[in-house]
Amino acid sequence: MKGQTRLLYLFLALPMLYVVALIGFPIIYNLLMSFQSVTIANLARLARPFVGFENYATAFADPAFRVAFFNSIIFVLANVIGQVGIGLLVALFFAQNFAGSQFLRGLMLSTWLIPALVTGALWKWMFASEYGVVNFILATLGLIGAPIYWLSDPAVALTAVTIANIWHGMPFAMLLIAAALTSIPQEQYEAAMIDGAGPVARFRFITVPAITPTLLAVACLVTIYSMRAFDLILAMTQGGPINASTILPLLSYQLSFDQFRFGVGAAVGTFAFVIVFGVALIYVRTLNKEAAA
Image (cartoon, rainbow, N blue to C red):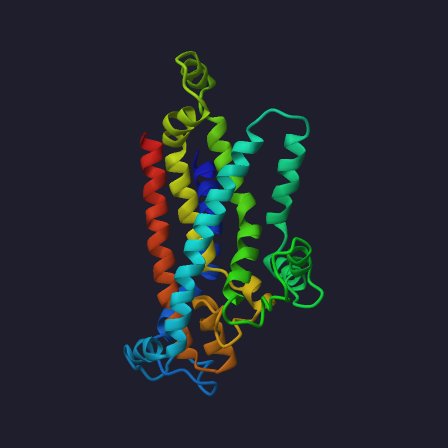
């Protein structure tokens, strides 16, 4: 028993050491930097001048921060609506029994497995103004008379990266929702059909109440992943033009590694982390309520 206890402690210590070293330390280090005056000269030292909330005040007063914060809200809301909404529709489609449904579901899930950087590069080519597939399809359908400059027009750049991110993340939402749909007893649908309930009534009074906790959990996950979006936007627009597609994580990177304002960049990163952490708490509470039910 003593040997098994020691082995158990060892197995618990290894993941805890991983979490502390690769997750906990960077978070604490970034939080510490946000209260310090950090330059290239003192970047390698932990003892740096303490400036309090000066970095946060500087970040909040920067017009680029306000633009990035507003873009983040739009980007997250659009992704939650798009990924959860489309994911629900696709999950309902694949819930039907037809030949090849499992294969098509797996094929769609493979798009989520593609690295976001690769996805961004693919959509950058598709959104190209002169030879892109998107403009070609729209022009063929007669929906546009001139090319849309998706990645260089400030009015549509955020829309372009949002579409690409929804395409990339939707299969994950679809998979979770599809798993929730399979847990609904078929007897409920059969009883409702006997009582004369149509497809809309069955969806409203059986499907929606049964998967509501899952939809809330998926919405929280999509919010967290969208707030962490970085590489896809970097590959497509690099936050441009004129910060039109910049969100908080990308702004933190730009401040730190393009402008070498490490303290201000850390403050922006910490602010984004607080938002993600708050949503993560809501997600955990949603899971606890679902488990209790």
